Length: 140
Figure 1 (cartoon, rainbow, N blue to C red):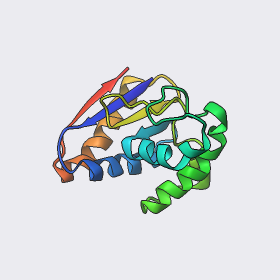
Figure 2: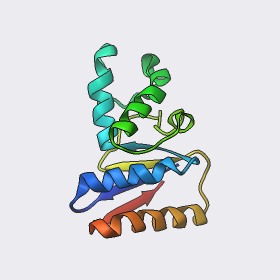
Figure 3: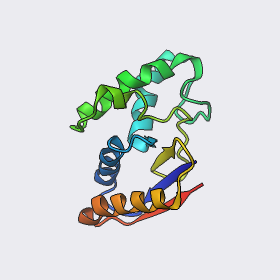
Figure 4: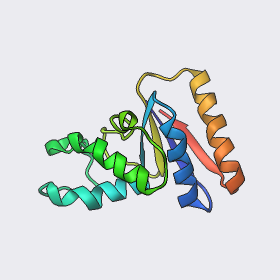
């Protein structure tokens, strides 16, 4: 089950970075964001014959999955986001790069309870309110 987020106004990039920071401390989810998807496509597509960022194939297709922890380590550290090596093992979703119309998603490892969704909304509200961003949230 995934909770998709669509950022509805500026500053979109800052908002996505804030959501990434939130996710680091949520071990019950893995994530995908448009910046992660783009960088994965750019950095790793050359190693995959015929792969494009628009593929609906899982990231693990053709052996990419073992590279995700190292990618996560470089990605988060280059963004100035503190993350443990252990969290790098499972923070990036391996279910595919397709975000559709959304900018970010939290993929729940287990079906979330209403309380989990409410806590996530509170976290998102607290980091996006200072930025003045509005957002749309869909869990399915």
